[in-house]
Amino acid sequence: MTTAAPPPLPTAAGSLPLLGHAIPLLRDNLAFIASLRAYGPLVRIYLQPKKPTIVVNDPVLIRRMLVELSPGLD
Image 1: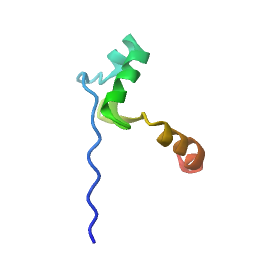
Image 2: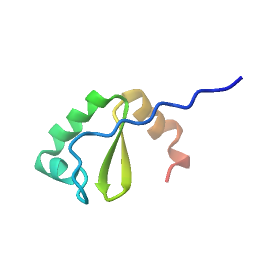
Image 3: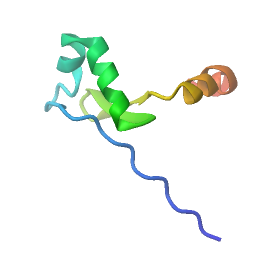
């Protein structure tokens, strides 16, 4: 039995070369974070060149990370 690879994470629109998503985040951080919900439970943003940051938008996943997985997260 083979398992299918998970779908790739969506990347938020509006990334600028070298600056990534820093400008939209600095302009209006709450509106930017709220706009990421449209991408689904996980979305990739860039705050440093070539270093993605994964934003978790799903309350169930956030709880699991904070309660169940927190001892093993760095």
